[in-house]
Length: 464
Image (cartoon, rainbow, N blue to C red; front, side, top):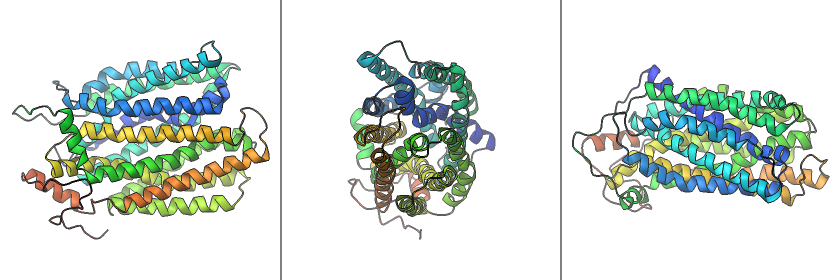
């Protein structure tokens, strides 16, 4: 694997995150709102559908990783999925936002099936795409740069989704559901055109001259069971997902019902996304200079401080609420860029500890934990809305409004704090990854160890 990538290769790879996040950001920001306020599903039902589909998605991610790891073509292991999977994914996305002329449980069943079909199509493309991150370079610093550039494109996609969804939904001519279908079709066309560009730009390293035996299912599991770094990262991102989901999905509800300014909410989302264009370059520079563990701990302190402030201050101004959301973006994006930078490093750590390299399985299993956490968080959020008495498109009681704010504080606080505590046990310190890559190149590896074994003493961590 090369250590350095040209700017063209970096851009050609990372622009794929724009395509992926036209889908992902839409699902994250609008799908639950679409279910409750456009389709008319009860919030608990909407949350349950989201949770079931997310858990299902997570369950198939490791399987997709195993299949991708075993794929061998003249184009590489992962690139063919980008070439042939983009159009089916776009069609599934349009189906996700289509409301059929059904009602009751038939309508809920349709929405669940459509959501699961979308998740299968998304996994087929996203797992190979993210696995390329560990395959195209072995440099930890380059991976930090790639993570930052991917987050920049993800942020641009979030800005696109947030800025255009509201106006384009209006094209539904009075039917919000039809408007969402139109938006989905436009985003699907744009995303489907990008994946072939990634396919043509990115190159995978050649396979070894000797035929490597395919890893068995047991080998895949052995490659991760002894990988302490991977499990710490999974604990961190799963807890962080709880916080980001509760806060992110609350935005539209808070502006519409708490501030009684739905139009400001449509402005807040693109501003929320645009803030990332300023925040991410700063995090990219920071992550190349300090230990990734330290960077995550900084995001924890920042996020906890913001949530404590929000808990004790009653924000009734849309402008102040936008400022608060911008502040919280610093913490959320910092954790996200650090996660996507850490995850590829756990591939070499696991190979060094176990002698087995299973990059797609690690990325698939990583997305399993992420998506299950997101799904459970969405289900918990929908249940919590129902528990505090929320009813869509009605004036909410003071009790319900107070409950909505409690949800926005308590769940993110648990998630952010828990993720920070997990990072205290992350074994790869500054300089460790470079030494591990050098050991692998020299044909050396660490003694076999359990997941609870500390980082080996022959790698001397630098000060963080």
